[in-house]
Image (tube, rainbow, N blue to C red; front, side):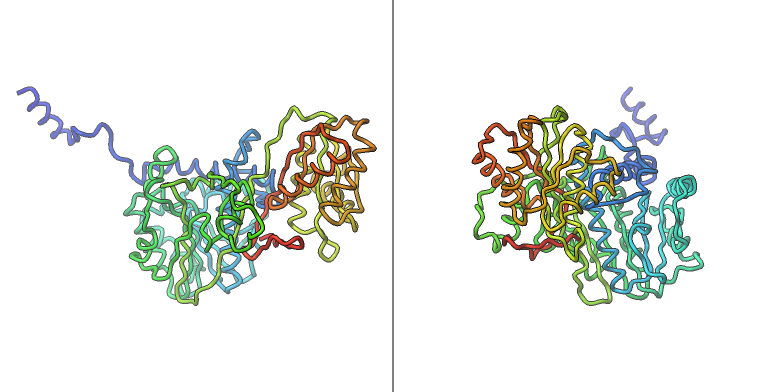
Length: 485
C-alpha cells in the first residue's frame, strides 16, 4: 500500500522513479562547451610558443592561459586538427570559394591567420557570450580585425541560426560556400547534430564544400560526458543528411596521411612500405596516435558538392619531438648540436626553421648549455641569425658555429674537432642532437660512432626533433627533400 502511494506521488510530481537526474540536453552543455573554447585557445597558445614552425596563432594567448608544465603529447590532437582545417581552408580559397561559414568558431582566429583574397566573406557563428568575449578581446588587445569577418551570436542547436545568418546584409546563398565545423558536432545530441549537418547542406544553392570533425561511437561519453554524438558509419550519416559526396578520413589513414607519430619510421613502415625496402620493418610502432585509440577514433569528414573530386587535404605527420628535457641538464656540461639543412635560394627552409626553433628553445630552457650550429655554405651563420631574430639578440650566448660540413657524416667529424678543443674545458657530458624526426636515428648513430672513435665514450647522447609535415611522396634517399606543408 505504501509503495503504491509513493508511486502515485511520483507520477503526480511528474518524476521518473527509475532515473535519479534528467538526461543532459544540448542546452545544458552551453557552459562546459564554452569552457572548451578556452582550453583550445590555451593549447594553441602553448603550441605557438613551443613550435611556431608547425602552428603559429599569435592571438590565442589573449584567450587562454598558458600552462608551461603541460606535456607536448597532450597537445598533438589539437596541433594536427588545426593544421588539417587550415589546409582545407587554404585549398578552398585556391578553388575560388568566396564565402566561408565557421560554425562554433570559439576563439579561433583562422581567418586572421590565413591569407585571404579581397573578395572573401567570412561568417563566424557561436554562442552570444563567446562572440562577445572575442569581440572584447580584439578591442582590449588592439588586435587588427578584418572587416570581411562578420560575427553572429546564435544558438546552433536551434534552426533560428539560419534565419539570423540569412538576415545578414552580405550573406549570399548563391555564392560558392565553404563550411567549417571544427570540434563541434559531438557536443550535440544525435538528432541535433544530424539536423545541423542537413541544414549546412541546404544553406547554399551554388557549390558547397565542408570539413567537419566527428568521433566514433566509442568516444561518446568522453570529455567528462560532454561528447554526446559519435558514429562508426559517419559517411552514411552525412549522406542521409544530403551530402552525397563525402569522405570520412581517419587519423593515420594512407589516403589522408594524417597522424602524430613518435617516430617517422612508423609512418614509413605502416603507410608507405614501398619506399622502405632498405629499412628494418621491425621498427617498433608507437601506439599513441592523437588519442585515436581502438574504438575511440577521430574523423575528418570532407564534403564536396557540385565540383569535381579534388585533393583538398594535405598529408601531415606530427613528430613528438624526441626525448624529453631533463631540467637537471641545465649545467655547462650540456651541449646542443643543431644540424643544418641545405638553403634554398640562399634562404632557410621551413624545415630548418623547425630545427633552429627547437634548438634555441632548448637552449633557452637550459641557459647554461652551449649550442653548436653545424652546417656549411653559410648555413650556420644564418641559423644563428634566425634564432636571434625570434628569441632576441642576446639568445644563444654560448654559441659555436661549425661552417664546413655538408653531410651528416661531416657534421659529426667537424663537431668532433670542436669536442677535442672544448670538451675538457666545458666538461661536456650531455649531448642533445637537434634535427628532423626522420633523420634523428641516423644522426644519433653517426654522431655516437664518430665521437666514440675520437675517444669520447662517456657521453649521454639524446635526439630532439623539430615539428614538421611531410608529403607522401617523400623518399628515404640521402638527397631527399621535404616540403613543409
